[in-house]
Length: 81
Image (cartoon, rainbow, N blue to C red; front, side, top):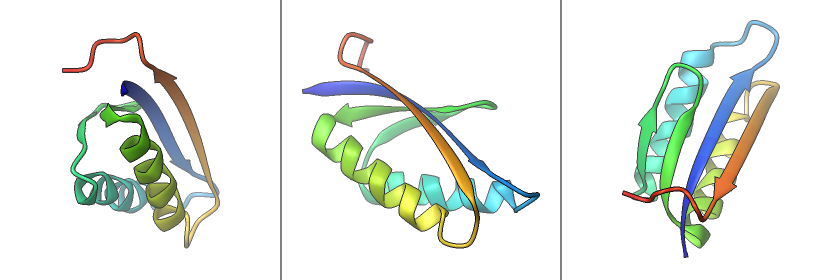
């Protein structure tokens, strides 16, 4: 099943946000996912299993050095390019 996902990832306590987002996006690349980074969130498209695996891996890697928050909205009804 194809899904569209909107994800927002934040570091807490003044930690380097751009470095953490860079790690997060690098994992999406490793999983071969299509995505679009925006100023407030990133939209990801792909197979549901691949997307959820990538989200878990990205969260784990980007959160290693910082306290973080990640919010995710998943839809199988939004267009998948």
